[in-house]
Length: 145
Ligand SMILES: [Zn+2]
Image 1 (cartoon, helix red, strand yellow):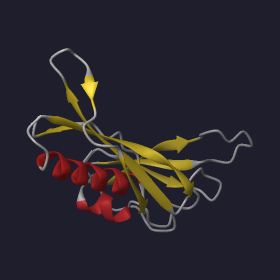
Image 2 (cartoon, protein in one colour):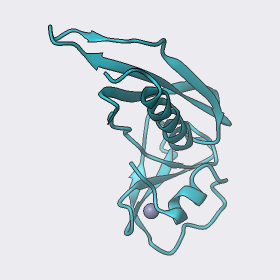
Image 3 (cartoon, protein in one colour):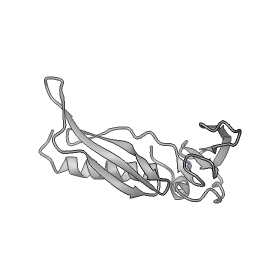
């Protein structure tokens, strides 16, 4: 889910910001709006292949550019580090919940430390990226899993 520099800069910016030169319009994301007004315009990046949504004022995250991301778990020191993007209280602050787990020999997944919530980010991507990095650093400080 790594964004190129141009997408990372645009992510979380106001929708009035122009798309960067390597973003190509893919279509309109209608979302849940039934009144015909669009939710977001979707662009695909030619560099990092990320779908960037330019939300309208009626969009679910009004007037912002937001990268569509699906964070995948990573392995660190024998542990699986995964993140879930947290529902936001408002469109200006995003969070991600980080879980560190270990698959035991009996096939049970165990969580050696409590899940940690990181909040206050400009976008879901920014929250997930930081939560994943903090989780990896934490896992490396644990006894090998
Ligand atoms: Zn990109």
